[in-house]
Amino acid sequence: MTKPHPTSKSCGINRTAFLVLGLLLVSIGTQHSVAQTNLLSASTELATSDQPGALRLPGAIIKTPPPIKVPGLQAGLLTNVAIKEGGRVAQGQFLAQIDPTESQLSLEQSKIDHQLAEMDANNTTDRDYFEKSLVVATAEVNRSIAANNRVNNSVPIAKLEKQRLEQERATLQVQQANRQLEIAKFRTRLTQSEIKTAEVDLAKTKIVAPVNGVIVNVAKQSGEWLQQSETVCEIVSTDRLRVEGFATIEQAAQIKTGMSATIEFNQPWMKLKSVPGTVTFVAPSANPLNLLVSIWVEIENPDQAIIAGVNGDLVIQTDASATANGGGQ
Image (cartoon, rainbow, N blue to C red):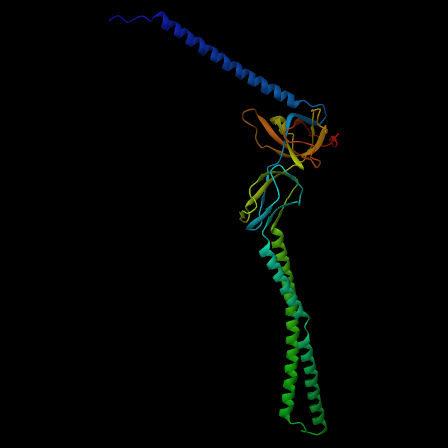
């Protein structure tokens, strides 16, 4: 049987397929070449700096720290939640209230117990009585001894021994009364501690902001039951921001935590043109995709003048003898 010859139509399809495959290979090679060129260009740009003893890392980004989860320090019913998402709070500001009734009763009871302990500690009636009894018993013994010295056996030995027993009993009663007063004083210290504990428990019913920041999430509302350590809200602190930049492997080898740094802004609408900071983190390894190392610098932002998301140039003073830039201009 004669093998059929390929038609002109199938030949055209084959040629088209080879042409598309060739173009695809050329495109992939071009993209790889462009990627290498961009990485080389980025590394060259990162290496430039107009300051001696410093490294300039362009394209650094301002970021906020992770949100702080504010927990309830004890379980209870939330009677008041005075915050909303987006609201700005100051450190120590009231956020929410757990029903304080039980803690208030416990505090009141501790105060009453302390008052009773103080009354016992200040009550010297028993000791005074026993001291006077000791004086009387001692006087009787002394009189009997004196009488026997004048006239032998004028006071019978049995009576004298009984008087001495009363004297010894009075002595022991005085010692016991003093011991009870000491115990009462220690009890007042214990009740004072109980008052402080009750005050701490009562303070835990009031939830306050641990830092200055912005409320980004409210997890509980008034009327809900709160378990101990359960999150009430989340706060992002804006007083201290993180600047994240990227350095080449060669640059990262020169950067150490604790070094002085400056973030410089080029945006015309930024009031601050530069802000000082400190290197807090140098990544132990480079990103395998671009061979760049992450560098973190922390800066202060007490006036909330810097908004997260803004980028700028990160200048790190790698020379200890170089003078770091000053504050915001």
